[in-house]
Image (cartoon, helix red, strand yellow):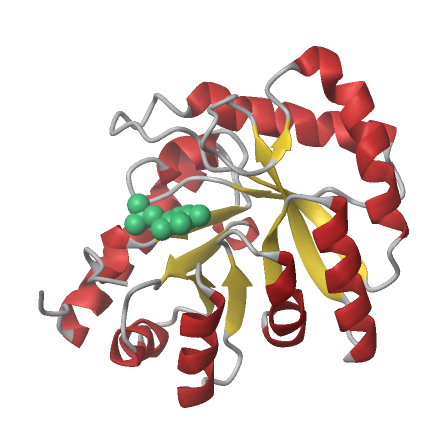
Length: 242
Ligand SMILES: *Cc1c(COP(=O)(O)O)cnc(C)c1O
C-alpha cells in the first residue's frame, strides 16, 4: 500500500478539526478542552511530519519499539507522544523515559514499575487508567463494566495514587468495535460516570481526562465528555503492515 500524500493528510486533518469543532459547539463545549491525538501506528515519519506541519502536536503510538525509532528520527518541537497500546511490564522503562503520556495503565504492577523508572529519570509521568467498560473478554483494562463493583475497584486503585512519580489524570477506554457511531455511546457514558464516581471516592487527584472515541465515533465521544479523542484512519489513512 502507498501512503497518503502530505496534502491529503493535511486536508484530512482540517476536516477532522472541523468535525471536532462542530461536535464541541453542538454540545456547548470549548474545542480547547478537547485534545486531538493523531494515531500514527504503522505509519512512517513522513506521515507524522505532514500532520505536524498542519498543526498536529499530539501523537498516539501502540508499539514501543516502533514509536521509539520514529521519535529518534523526528525532532518536532512541542510534540507530545501518547502511549495508547498495551504495555508489557518489561517495556515500562522505555515507556516511562520516552513518552509524554501513558494512557494504558492496567495493573498496579505496571504502575509501580513506571513510577520507579520515572523517578530514575527525574520526571513525573502523566497517566490514564485503561478501563474495560464493556466486559468484552479480549479487552485490556481494569474491570469496570459492573457498576456494583466500582467501590472495590476504587479500593484497588487507591495505591496507584500514592506513587509519587505518576500523576493519574483520568481514564481511557476502547469499546468493542462497531461501525455504528452510536453503538459506543453507553460505554462512553459509563466511563464518564466512573470518572465522576472516582473523583468522589478518590478526591486526592483530579480525574479530569477522558480518552475515548476514534475515527468513526469521536463525535459521539465528544458528546459524552471526551477530553481526548484518538483518531488514526480519518487523518492518516489505512495503516500499512506493522
Ligand atoms: C489504532 C487506535 C486508534 C485509532 O483508530 P482509528 O479507527 O484508526 O481512528 C485509537 N485508539 C487505539 C487504542 C488504537 O489502537
